[in-house]
Amino acid sequence: MSETRVNGTDAKTAHQDLHSERGALRGEHPGRARNPVIKVADLAWLEFEKPDLDRAEVFARDFGFGVAARTERELWLRGTFAGSPCMVIRRGRTSRFIGPVFRAAERADLDRLARATGTAVQDADVPGGGRVVGLLDPSGFPVRVVHCAEQLPELPGQRPLTLNHGTDQRRTNATQRPPREPSRIQRLGHVVLETRVFARALDWYLDTLGMIVSDFLFLDGQRGRGPTMAFIRCDQGSLAVDHHTLAMHLGPANGYVHSAYQVTDLDAIAAGGEYLAERGYQRSWGIGRHIQGSQLFDYWRDPDRLMLEHFSDGDLFSCDLEPGWAPMSTSGLAQWGPPATRDFLGASPSPARVRDVIQALRGDNEMDPARLLGLLKAANS
Image (tube, rainbow, N blue to C red; front, side):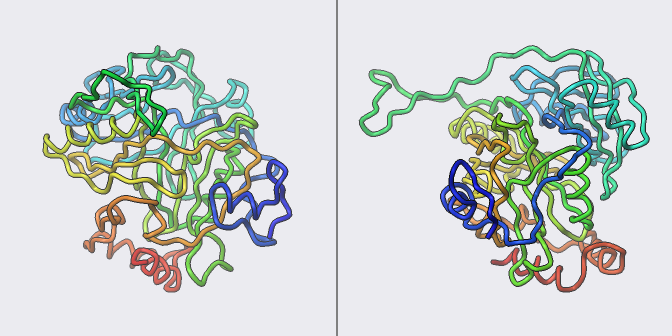
């Protein structure tokens, strides 16, 4: 086992007690770069294209977003917390994910990143203005790093309900009647991506953006070949941050899996879910509680079949916690909740998925028959 010590205990004990059954074996991926170019502070927003901005806005409001700005060609969505917008949707011919935008900790980080990557610092097309560097990750996703000139002000949010716990009875002579209304989004939490070049993409995010791994997953019987999924957080030193800001897993395509948005509490998730169901939207999976990250979760499809998550009560890690290691399995996705659906897993056969598999097995990437069989086994375990 790793010799690393965490808060006075060895890594093995820390993983058993905190977030994973085990830590790294000697010589396995350390989950961080020794000398990254910069260390991004957080996700800023995600970029999408859709042909119908009016329909996109209706779903966005039903899901719980506020509108930060709207033009004929752009829709900027926000949460109630102060900061940057959560998402921009630009008018395009098809509905698709473009890429993530990360927030630089300091303006000078953009200059450092531009010099190291041979790119330029440009004006950012964000309400309030700012500066941005545009990159391309090994999977082919446009990745931008931004420093905003202005921050959006805080908006009124949903208050968490006062709960009675055993003998800790703080609510008396008062009832609980949460209104049936949209879950009010507080902020963007994370994005999950599928990639054919997992190892290359992982190292790029660690080396270039200074992110660090919270948990690795590996395929049964293939741990020696390295991990096939990583939950990755930003490194803000002793400041504890989300368990993952970015998650990636090996798969037959390079594409968007889902994005996640924080709401107040379990009641906000449940009441907001009832609101969505009444309006005819499709729940993909939920409600439950994850293992890696511990979030309470609920997954939904928008009218264009893109997946979005409401979450609450996620784990927060500081920089001194080493990565956990666990086998990849469907049963390991949740501590409790309904079984993961085929829709959530992307396991429903389709001509497009068959084409992805054929192209992946023929291409120059990290997918091969053994990896494919291991992924299929994990999806059914």
